[in-house]
Length: 496
Image (cartoon, rainbow, N blue to C red):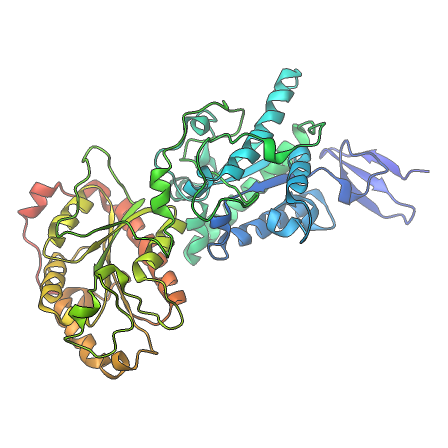
């Protein structure tokens, strides 16, 4: 004998158990089914590289499923959404689990980022869900707007397949639409905007799941045979990994069906986004950075890291311990012996996780020209400074030239390794030398000037903060930035 069921206005059904307690269950769920067998309210598709970038994506997943659980009355939050890192137990066949989840989920939440678009697995997940939308439309059931792209990090040139969705991200908040969800999670001051976004998305998921239930896929999905919607090669480090794929779009992407045949996204910029610590970084070996076509327009999604560092042979005139240096300027490894990664690679990996392209160049007397071009294109410049190198005339003069400009949207980051005893013993003198070259920056006491960064972990956090603050300032000041020729002729303060 089955428990008694009653329809209620919210689209749920009350199931009266023999104990007299009532449980809310989604309309349409067979009465013999337990809550664990309910349809999946959402499938969270994300790029694994984005998932490994700090706690932000994991926090969003937990917050979202908690909000959805609260609205549907499920007893266990893990039953309302699929997130492969939490949902697949060790040893299980991830292809079968992914296929089963994609076959029955009510909505598809895509965490859109440059990494997402470059992932084969994200493209396959999108293809499967898009196939369900097409099948529903062909069966006369319409094509419900249950494909929900979430801007994780902004994409300057989203693929046409996403632009056709015409999803209005402004409804979820202007700051989110411009800078992405990750930005809301990064800064404490965005708490209220994040909560408003979370509630709005959870409410939309529940409403769509109840009002427009997408029929499940009737067959077992062979995930390995599914084509990639985006037709691009995976990023280094993302190949061979399942789910976790996520895509990113600009503010105009939206849910709905999409054309599977699209021109492939150019994978070359993606290689630049995820550097391999064992490969050569993207750098300029000569004094003048290579110019880029002015018509391309970089924007705050591109950053140039300028290294005030040099080779082992050149720094040997100043110090005795040379284990932190190599044969060229970009082989500086300030956090040895705990971390052997070069600082330029650390920086480019942080930029990649922020959804940004990046380049590396050596500090020289052409820094003013680099800043002019970057300012005109609303791009970010960040100096990574070795305090020992700042004692060399070449770097001291270039740093002074940089400091005279008193740039409001470029940053300086100075690593310091407490285990480097020679640097520790000379720290006060090194700081005084650096302060004399960067007088304006030191006096300004700005968040974009960060000294004594003592570990790789602190380096990542400080660099993220500089990037985020620089982006915010560019958005704020971009309308009053001057053209290079005009700016070059205007006076600048040389003092505080």
